[in-house]
Image (tube, one colour):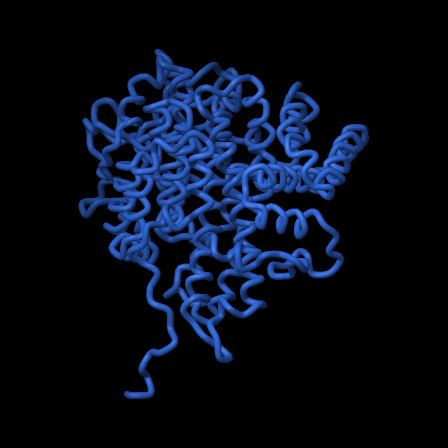
Length: 540
């Protein structure tokens, strides 16, 4: 019918170089010694921006994983079937080193290049990023315990991918399983038991309430051994090729992406090898948790980039009331504000990635200890609201699953929950400030390096220092933890933008995030007068 001709609709945003079009990312990679990876990142940007890759991402989130507990003869198999597009996506991500490239080739900027690669893939399809992240994060645990981890390292560092469960695989994907239904974040309330079998092997019996990517080749698992809560490496296949006693009970009907499966599992005599010492399970696995927290930041930042880019694309190709949406001051203000949030997240994400490189000194290690937790809390919590505002820019289209921002809006909350929800992270920050010497000094030194440039920033810097001292002296500091972490996070972002971003971006961030906005300041698009919205939007 003639009335159904589609006019005034944006073309699909595809076949673009997602790296080249992300100016803040390109600048940050160069700033933090990752410029040697520019060519590789351009190729990655073109790959994830291709129409075929986007089609695979769409299919992977439409054709949900299916659990098969038994084969047709009644044998227990505990397998999950994924869309073929999901396997192609994860194969490409691993082939580009989104998992362990920084470990395989450690040098200045290695984690920056790896972070950019990870974000480019997660920007288009976030589900596969879960097993990719866990595989990256398990490496320091394997390296610290070569007697157990050594045989796995070569497989984990491999850039090949094989989604089948079969003996003799030359590559491996890792997961982790810590939480149980009765305890959640309180992992010391776990009830899974580990019975010694000899030679460092144990038989595990119990359950895990959340086990993401259950088709991984192996997992780090917390369970109670005779000496206390301990960490175990539990493979899905035993040395003789038989399936281990890992039973997938059901797949979670979760809010976010549908491409990746999350599950509940039970251990029925599952054989695991002790990693570290009995009773030190949390300390053993904590480095994996810390690295995964950084990837939560990267994932949230990738989501912010996708949301901002899609909103701006729509505004540049759709007209209303006689002119393009992007030329209308109200819309331009929203887009500029979304970009400010994405730029701030990008700046701190790459700065933290650089602090995780192999050449990090004691000061960098102290800085990243506090700054990673602070930023994980803030950036991941900002993600859902940011996605919603971008979704609204597309109007009714944004609310449908035919466009990517509905999935993005559903996905962003998990990154605030995963590896420590708000209160857990905020209390961890208090614990670090009170118990770990040097972390506050390193953080304060980083933030203060932007002092003397902007009067508003300098005033807020003094406020931040007073607040830290006040909370430290408070007999009940827990109630102030969230407020403190929020201040620390925004001050770190402001400091980085003052030192690295164009003047228009830095000034707008300071005015809108550190200035006085008694009404509406928490919502996007309520920018103060004088902000160069056109210049900021051009950076999208």
